[in-house]
View 1 (cartoon, helix red, strand yellow):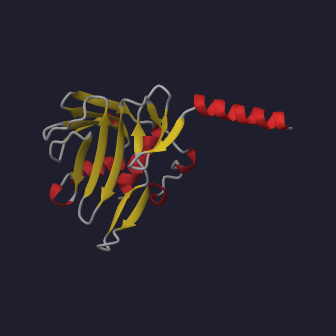
View 2 (cartoon, helix red, strand yellow):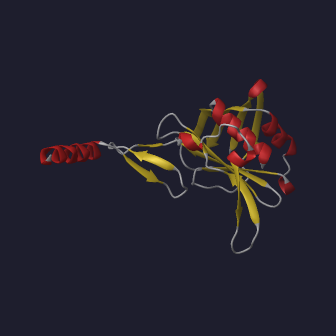
View 3 (tube, rainbow, N blue to C red):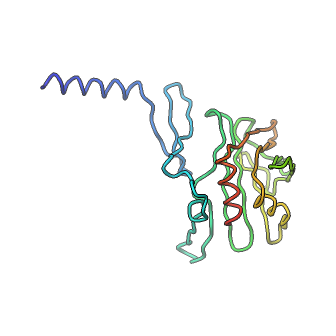
Length: 194
């Protein structure tokens, strides 16, 4: 019996030393840290959206200090084939406007004021929008919809069509990703519900 316990302990230690480590980023994403220094996002199948209802895709958060509420996506939509290049999407709606934050990884981290994003939507609809925020080197491409920012027609397109491909331009080039059917449906539902 004692030899059996020792063998189990040795196997556990060996698999831990050869294994990979799960970690949670500051933004709440779960990643797998690999022995070679690379990482990859982990997708929790238990939280994936199956029915695409507003309750599954969106959440309401109340600011404790001001008492004001805002809607945002439950988690990010992450498009990446590896741990170094890709796009992630997050959406938030305040009192008068919607903010779509696209984080681009793999072609520099700086987004200039005049950078653009290209969308290919279903039905071969193409849409190009300009970065709505200041220059930053945080990989953040921001788009604002509604209120003083307008873009009501563009918002209506995102609410009615699936996004097939997104290309985000950075100061060093661009990052382009194709969205899976699941990712495209989750984003469209978020645009519908927000």
